[in-house]
Every structure is written in C-alpha cells, then in structure tokens.
Image (cartoon, rainbow, N blue to C red; front, side, top):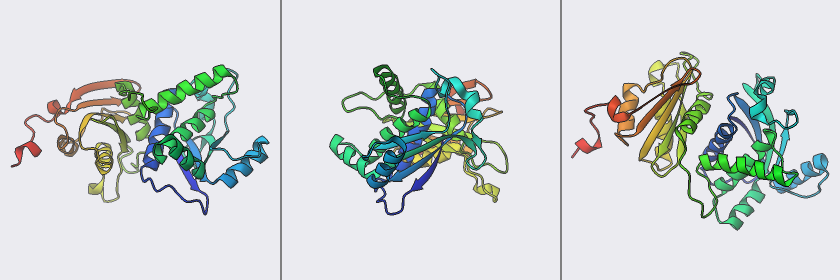
Length: 303
C-alpha cells in the first residue's frame, strides 16, 4: 500500500525514527489481512489537536479533538468491504498517486503521544494502531453496532498481529508463509525499476519476529542498482536485526531467485534461512539458502 505523507506546519514531529517504517509495514499488513491484490494509496496527515478538532466539528458535528479521522472515497455496496469490491477499487485509480486512492486519514500527533504514554508503549506502536484503525474504515468497516465493532477489531488485530504489534501480555504470532509472500508482493509495488521493468519485492523475517520489506531500486548507472533482498536486509540491519529465519521474494512474470550477490549477503546473517519465491498468479517455490549457496564462505570461516 502506498502512503502519501503530509505534515502540518508547526506540528512537532515524532522523534521516534521507527514510526514511518512501522506505519508502512502496518499499512501493508492491513492490505494482506483484507486480502486485496489491488495497489491502493492513502493520504496520511499528521496534525495537531486543534486542527483535528476543527475537522471533526465541520465534518462530523462533534466539537472535540480525537486521535484519528478517516474520510473514504470508496462507497461499498451494503455488506461488502474492500476484499469483496476490488473491481470497484480499480475505478479509483489516480495517476498522480499511481494507485487506487482510498481516501484520507488524519492523526493527531499530540493525542497519539499522550495515549502512548498512558498505555506505556512507544509512539510508533501507537501510530501503528491508529493507522490500522483508519485504514479499515477506508476498507469499509465501521463500529456503530457491537457486531460491527467486533468485526473491525478482529481485522485490526489480525493486521497488527502480522506486523508483530500485539497487546501487552499477548504472545506474538509468527506470520505464515502466505503472509510473508503477500508482504513481498506489497513491497514489489514500490519497486523503482524504470530500466528493466522487472519489479521485485522482498520481506525478511528476523529471529525476534520483526518483519522488514524492500524493493529493487535501479540506477541510471546500472551497476549501482540494488536488489530487493539487499534493500530488505540492509533496512533490517540498520534497525538492529542481524539474525534471520526466512525471506520471501516476489516478482511478476519470472521466478525471482536471489542473484549471487544477494545470496552472499543473506549468508552473512543466516546460512539456513528459508527462501520463498512467488511469481505470476500463484506460483510458489520454497527452498533454503544452504541449498542455493552450497559450500558457502561466511563469518564462520574467518578467524
């Protein structure tokens, strides 16, 4: 899912450097939980209490600040959500966004900061919760009745669980192979590949349960192109993860087996990680890095 960011002037931005990465992962996990294959886009405005109160008053008749507001552009048939109406979503394709635009989400940073402090968790985690809530409103969920609230909360928990964000005291759930592959497909949509037109996405699972995604990034000087696998690994290492158990890689029309350079980089951090690849409509193959790089040379071989 593509997030179009906007920051209100004068708003004190979060100092938690992990929040953009966490929110992008949550957005992708929402799309995976809803099982939509259409490339969607959402506009996210990080604002303050005064502005969100004014918008709440003007558009909803409620004169008070809140933590998150959603304004969908898609009006789903009764009883349907985004999963059931993907043909309808395609009609919302916007060239400027290069995605099917779902609507706008406003999040009050001061309110998110206060709630994070009250709940005793990080701001990036709180922003992830609020973003998921807003996205599922854009997917057609609501919480007017008790049953609607239950269904919406179940979907939020499902998406946040895939992202590794759980309630205090709840055990984290390991993502399934299908979810890893779906997240790789989401990352593929952000590929920068104007020269080869060969889009690739990757999702790597760290030993501590965190997920990191990446896409291939090409360059006019072709030798400076970076593969999706290395983008994901480098992002993970920059966030402190250095031990990995699996990587999923997605492309469109051919099996995206890792190149030799990527195999060596992956081997730096785990020789026995599982490697999953997917392409086409539903083709999937699975193996291990040890099988792809036999007789490997790595940290274990250095004194």
